[in-house]
Length: 475
Image (spheres, rainbow, N blue to C red):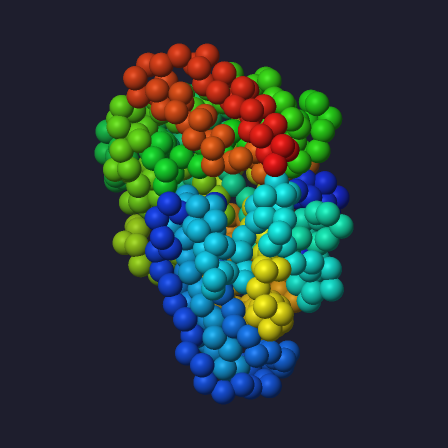
């Protein structure tokens, strides 16, 4: 984590236009409550703490990988102020179900995550106006707030990017082999070249391992179709197809529209087939939950892995995962889609916005706002967000040593400097997101594992979008 993403990123027109717009039937996986001590006016790190209030705080965390850091923050704040802070982290891919269950309880979350304006409509009765909050005041780019019904409904707590993480060390070694498709990694700047490289690597695994001393089993890491992994495709990969369709339609790239045609699903199919055909994973078992794509990359068994910059900390040189591949070996490229590859950058956006529960008592609301202010202004909070969670925070308080050191995120600037256009997170427009994704994944799984019809995939993508959009607007 050595590179810094410069603050100008949030000020560019590119991000302003793209960013206007990864969660449980099971209960939360971890829970912690800070023990009350005595109230304090100043934090232990010397940062002045606003009046902490007399209420309590309950954060329902969206990102499982940040749970440990949030538990530590909760304990630190309680020790400094006496305010009880509970952090509950929802199981991966199950946030919405957990949120609905927790909001129905008498002791409901005071802070919860909202992904898009569609969520604002669904949780309208729980939205507290953050217009006068410190969160909104410190937000560097106000387009990173969600506006709904005349309110600042939620404020982004980070922004992220995703693409194809790749092992540049292995790729550079491959380029030096006789018969390699490319002589430089820089030649991978379009889908056809990426597909040719992945296909060649996958067919020469034994040869490459012998020549380079690597542990490869395939070119791409497994594309899990289980609930813990399929969001990468029902959300992020589908989001590229949506982006290009929305762009052609001239509609808001993150708000979307009521109908889609699946215009770019042929390109989705090409990318998906590449993932499946150049991996060692058995396509017939991809929904079994038996695969760990991150581990495959970390152990040097794969060269390519579609995911986002939130993975950066997992590959730190001092990681506790037992990975032999570290951030020094890795970089990120766009998911080249075969549409406008010459101009395509990484996909940049967020589905992580803090909302405050308007149904909580005023005492709890006041203490919640004070806690969030402390998180984004104190040394303890900023260090946790940047250095422990590995996030890129969109607040003007994150300067100097608290600027993001996420090397994947820094690639956004590199592609932008090269004249590439970042891809908006158009999947944020998905209506009834969990239901639509499940309906889309069913025929995709049938196609992948049992030779089902691709036409069924297209039909689900198009028809279920219109169905859930109408259903959502009726509510």
